[in-house]
Image (tube, rainbow, N blue to C red; front, side):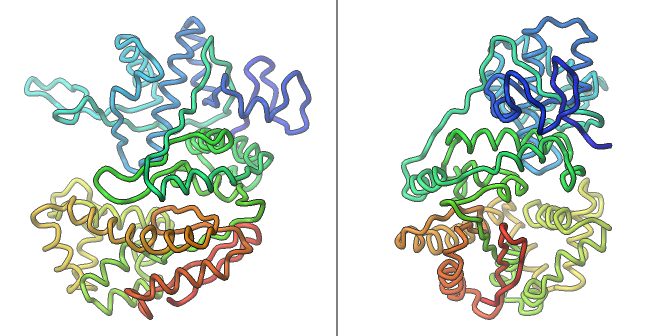
Length: 419
């Protein structure tokens, strides 16, 4: 069912032509309104909750949605400290999360104690639990917050790549009309889940006011910014330095790096021909994006046995063992002692190529550029120079063994270039 955005006061269908005291754009980018499921608002009203309690529920739900969308995993682990930024009272925080769970809006990861009772699962040594969003059907609405204003704090780490990224983010412009169509689920955006639309609006607001954190990873050398967190639908609704954006990414990046480390030419050819994710797609009858996540759950997770909980990751492991035994043995041995160290090794190699290599060269040439781990975005007028830099840097290690995908957001054209 299409999700329409409605005003809380009038309950009228969202319409880009609607006039009123506040324009739709003012409302969308207001710091005193949230986009939430209509069912959530109706449930809170039915309970007779006071405005301040409804606001606490909406803020907690919004935080969980954002983290679940960003993490792209089955469970998003969120620290208790994060919740205290939106609801200061510990008791109130726990009560509202319990209400959201009991009313079918979220799930909280559980474990069964010796007496058989279910308890909320926490990571040992950390005040952190796992959450999952229960996708809602129906309308979505913008609701006013009671005596609260949303804050979009800004932080930029003292790192040359982070500082340059902050400067370039200042040159990003939003197509606000397109953002409104995305959030209301109009036309081509009708299939987007409500949770994703909520996340898109959050990051649109963050980019619009030039806030958000820009930092390097704690365990890996990746660079994280509002641009890396922004869903792809939002990045396609942006311009950079007044021009349409061109995105250049390494095709099947993590598998290609694995093939390189394993020295498995057969596996590298599968990545070169973009066959790997296609075969995983067929195996589970899913789209390419989901196939990629399944494959990465195999790569980033521990070595699995037939009794493994993540059956799909186990089946991918079996597929690789059958079709690419050399890569299978390399991955198995690499994860044997510490599987997280292998994941870090891959991500650090990726950062070495895209940050220390490609991004660094673009900075020297004062080329506006933004990274998303294995891809880089530039204004359309800089496409030729950016492609040349990518070919030079990536060619040193992957020459003739991999491809880049060039995606022109303005024209919708996409094509591959051999490195």
